[in-house]
Image (cartoon, rainbow, N blue to C red):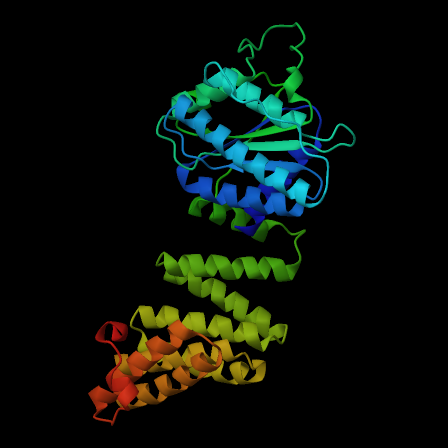
Length: 375
């Protein structure tokens, strides 16, 4: 996931820095749209030289969408104007009272007015992202953005491409492109104006990226082993037990060789959880017991707390409620010390249930714990 994030971040950053293309079109599914918008916000925070206008307003119709962009831009403008007055800086030039015409014309005028607010001196750019998180009419949305920079679709013409419109100077436009819309399946922009990329953070893309990282011998061995650990966790989540066991075995040998008790503990805990999920309880216990020594050496309270929880769950599965209660007692104490409120609450609920099953006395606090919390 991190590698996919970093790759898209580099693509967007390079687009902002380059001088030839006006558009960057980012294709992707609806599920990826919020992730990309979060990435755009992160890029804005890191960029100290340019002006970013990132709008996630929903698109229901061209008229509604442009109305919303105008409203949001005026709000940004007024906030910036107040800030300049407070700092005793020269006020921004006045915006037009209204932007007239159809949606394309109004949006073109809005972009031109926004560009005029940039300082005349220097190299500051305006980065404007059209990124509706809700799209009721993808085709109408694509047609609206198509109209901003009309471009011939006939790629066989030998004549030079038309010059960018005057309002496009020092402007960078980022547009969400909907993968399943008709406009996404054709070349709507002249290639001299547009760059294209794809945002894919699907489980399949993440797994493909992990396999590529693992196979890349140029990567440091520690990075490749961490990638193998994530792939083992994916195998485990998808019930590919044999594949997961093989990977965990390789990881355990590596972390023992590296003398890393914390990561040995992590691998042994995950091996125990895998066996416990398959009801191979003796094997699960053996892995948890192997994890005790490296956990003590690592002195990582989170690992110790997880071990206590897993030993408790295992004791419950083996019908040993008194032993489970002793384990949950340790888990509850560690979770409280770590400030893990949710974990402490769940530990207390399981502790109470285990004590009741074994006939042990419970404290007033345990007896008043809500029933729902015990599930």
